[in-house]
Image (cartoon, rainbow, N blue to C red; front, side, top):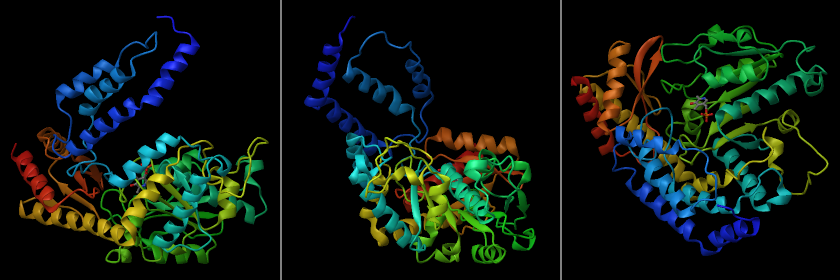
Length: 464
Ligand SMILES: *Cc1c(COP(=O)(O)O)cnc(C)c1O
């Protein structure tokens, strides 16, 4: 069992120089990707039971690298839900554009720290390029900066932190130094259908969830502007581009105008929906979004980058950097972009590479077509579901469809039956308090045939 440090280094160096381990990983990844669409969407009960093999004591000694990879693939791969396939309709997920996956594999080999440009000029330039492309695609003001974070949860925190810093700065208060304790209160206004991560952001940043002022929504879950409270220059208004259940959009232009007239800051949570702005046929949905102050959006949903790819965008660079500030004597500031100025994290991987590879591959036209196809497949879903006698609950304006299949027990049974069929994966939700099945069309891979096949599985699940 005893191994000295020279021997350990020699063994690992051998793994690096031979390259066999990486080739094996690539072969296994290739098979997984190619077969993701042929296997049952949910893992079999046997595959889930086999995951118990991972629960072993920490090894006492150095292992066999090839065997470890084989274990991960042979036990781990079958236990996954095929989220990259064509018939996963849970959460709001998105598949993976193959170029992005391949680019990520290469960039993982670099293992760059994206914190400072001095240690990764490549990352710095790729982040700057993505920032410019995102401004262009979303039509945002030219001073807009982008922070590359893990997801929209954190991007919302970044936007609200920038807002908090700026609103306090305007009244001469330095919140970084003084904290919230002695500060005059700020107000948070959002709709009753704001995403749960907006509420979490309010809690994390010390606004207090009890202090949120709620505007009402219409029957599609859109903020009703007539129910907005009186706004002022101590207020942060959080709008939604893409309701996580119905896919609906708040009336952005009107709300932004009213907010700005009052001196309020506007953040738009557009985790999956902001991409509507990049599609000619759908851009009316986000009308007026470019006038907001900050935005949160995911690459890993509608755009189909791999996880974890969230983006915080802010038209007030000074506020964003001040809110997320960090400095220490050993940090070498350079002429290169220092990624950590735009994110809460210091060290992190070069996730902008995944985004770059996706946008570089699809281009403006490819993004437009992919976003449109998600919408068209959702429309097809709704039509075929109605034809099959299902009760579609929402207007399908984007990529989300909801159906009512009965009470909570019936809804749970239905979701379980669809999942057990292996044909598709859907989950339940609540819509104005009533149980629904929600379908999110997010993967580039979903074809018209896949939609029809899923609807058949739904019909089967209903009759049992
Ligand atoms: C998914 C989602 C979030 C949270 O994003 P993560 O990337 O999961 O952190 C926030 N808001 C909306 C509307 C979402 O759909």
